[in-house]
Amino acid sequence: MNGCFMPRRSARLQSSTPSTARTRFCLLGFALQDGCACGWPLARRGSPHEDRWMIHPVMMQPPRRGIAPVVPPVAMSWRRIDAWLSRNAPKALAELRPPASWQSIQEAESRLGFPLPADLRESLRCHDGDTSLVGVLPCRRLYSVSEIIEVREIRMEIWEPDDPDQVETPWWGTTWVPISGSDGDDHFIDAGEGMWQNHLGDAVHDDQASFLGWPSFGSWLHEVAEAMEHHGRSSWFGAVTAPKVDSSGDIDW
Image 1 (tube, rainbow, N blue to C red):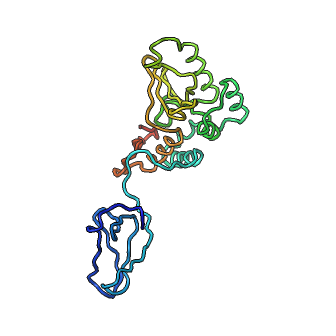
Image 2 (cartoon, one colour):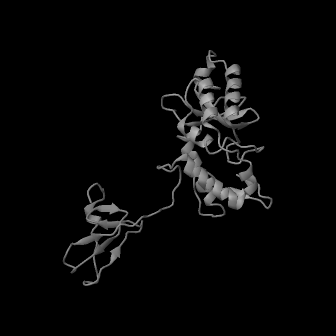
Image 3 (cartoon, rainbow, N blue to C red):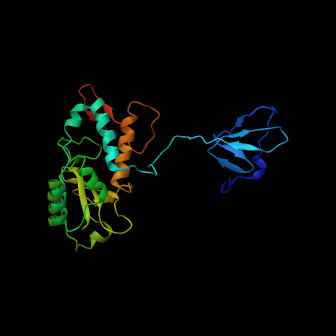
């Protein structure tokens, strides 16, 4: 039980029934023993004069705010999203395109001059964007492989990298890959090296771009799936707001 840091004097458990086994918890739901706090209940065995404890592992799921520290594969998140849409918003599911081909992805990477981020490649192999007007997911409309190339080339033509203002307030970046957008405003993934690699950003058409705090497309997509599965539950406090579905099957984020 090493590695737990609580004062020993506040951690001693006492038993009021000598011959029965019982589990004790502190108010936060953690078992305490000899200065240790962990997510396992400790069952007392033997007489009250003995300090023998048996650890019974229990998976504890406290409420969570923010981004999940462990992110499943993109394909798994898409399976959850597709299943939820099938049950709750089949019209939106029909707006998701079929998977992109490996050939189209490879051709896109050849035109880009660098590989697409791994999460984006995996996502395109699930759905090659969507055909909706405002977007099936809360990110504007997802781009297809061909739209990714088209939008980036337009951005690169307009962009003035030699402008001194681009150092402090960039409008676009060389290794930014657009993934969704509408009306000239685009979300992107940074495919370059460095501290912002794989991070999601927002590049509007008339102001400087910014990063959004999502470390990867996969982390964001996972939270979208979580939010969908908590649809209608007031207890959801995730990083993505749970969607609402109206009587016509339209999703409101």
